[in-house]
Every structure is written in C-alpha cells, then in structure tokens.
Image 1 (cartoon, one colour):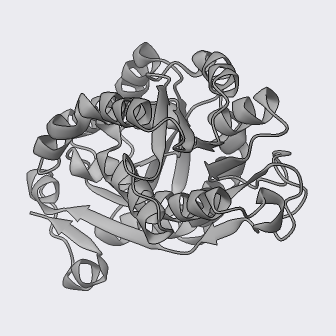
Image 2 (spheres, rainbow, N blue to C red):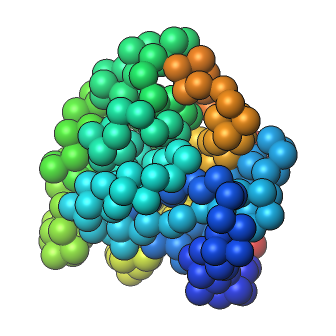
Length: 328
C-alpha cells in the first residue's frame, strides 16, 4: 500500500527522535501518548495528531516533545504504561486508542490533564461528568462508531442487493460494543429484510473457527463489528473473507487499505487531529474541565474496487459516486 514507505520512514524514528529533542531542550513540555497498538499501525493518525498540535502552535521536537508508550496490542500493559508516564511527570497524557488507554490514564492520575479518543459514550464510561462540562482532568474526542451500524449494513446490502442472510462477527469479551452492536444490527437487518447469524471470536483461533462456521452455513454477506482486537487482526480477517469469497463490511478504512471490500465509519485521522488541537490548547493553559468533549462529525466511506472485482461484484455507479475514496 502507499503508506508503507511512510511507515518505514517513521517507524524507528517515531520514538527515538522526540526523546532526543526532549534531552536537548529540558524545559520543553512533554506529552505522554498512550496507545494499545504499535506505531507501524498508526502512521496517518499520528500525522493527524501532529497537525492538530501545529494548528495550535506546537511543533514536535521544537516546542513540544512526545513520549510514546505502545501496548503492542497487549491491553493488560496499559495500566503500567500509564503509571510510568505519571512517574515521568509529563505535562499531559493523550490516550488515543479507545476505552482501555482512557480508563488506564484516569486511574493513574487525577491531576495530569488527559485527552482521550473514544467511540463510546464518555459519560456512561465515567470518563467525564458531561459532554459540555467534563469536570476533572479529562476531556477529548468522541467519534461515532456503533451509531453508524445501520448505515454500514445498508451500504453493504446496496453493494450485494441479492443478499438475504448476514453473518455478524463480534467479540464476546468486549461488552463496550457487543450489546449495542447486536441491537443496532438486528434492527437494521429486519428493516431491510435480512436474516442474521451471530459469530463470536476473541482469539486468533476463534476467528478461524468463525470463518469455518461461515463456510458451512454460507451466509451471503459478513458484517464485522467494531472492536480493537478485530482491528489488530484486520489482515487475518480480510484474508479469510477473500479466501471464502465473502463480501464483508468493516468499521474503519484500515481494513479497506489492506484489501477489505468496504468500510464506513468515523474519520479517525481527523479525530486524532482534533485531539492534537485540544492538546495544544491545554499546553497553552486551558483546563480540561473547560473544554467540552468534541463529537466528531466527519465520516468516510471507502470501497476497494480491486477486491470487489476479485469477488465478482459490480459496484453500482451511485455507490461509487458516494464513496469518499475508491481504492483501485
């Protein structure tokens, strides 16, 4: 993909360079960035965060340093990583990959400002008192994901109008999304005349088993639920969908970029840009309690035309016209 060269160029430097800049300028404020993934997965999003900082007057390595803490897809490492950032007395923490980092940062400190990026209701999660008046030391970006479920299923059905049965892949260990996803998918499927079959997976082996079940039962289309674990296994999921010749829909463009048929969801890179902008405002003296939670309203619909052709699908012209990007 076209991002690979960029990823290779920043992969090793993304951690070392900011730390070197910090050593050269001891008075520079330091942002602790906490994410459960690895830097080679996040090139576009990191670029968005840095753009938000620049928009607020801060340039990494010149007027601000970023101390990165990567969970490498091991969520149970997050509390220790957050505690380490607190011990280092960073100026603020950017918890950038959903509920896990946000809650870890919340537990680790009640005084250091925290910017989060989450797709679920931050009030329900206990991160803030309200969207307009967060209170405390946390605020951030709330992007829609589950709320877009019905639209994503409709787009998939429009691409495969003959479909009558949809398999829905969920992670049963992720209570944050599963219940709401099933409720939304069930209602949306009934509204357009689709029968649903739920497949569950929370490990690599269970993903393989779920696709084996799919192959036996032969649903017409596959709806992959929003889940951080699924995102970390997107190459496996896309490969299996291709091998089993199943049209599948995903929640983020990351899947379409590695060969997934289509994705519809929030523009996550823009959410990171907004988080960077908020980080800059906090570094300039604004309290998190005075910054309302931003509800991101930018969405993107991506179609992988190569995958569609490989699956024997003809993408309707009206669907192509509505796509924000068509990967040829």
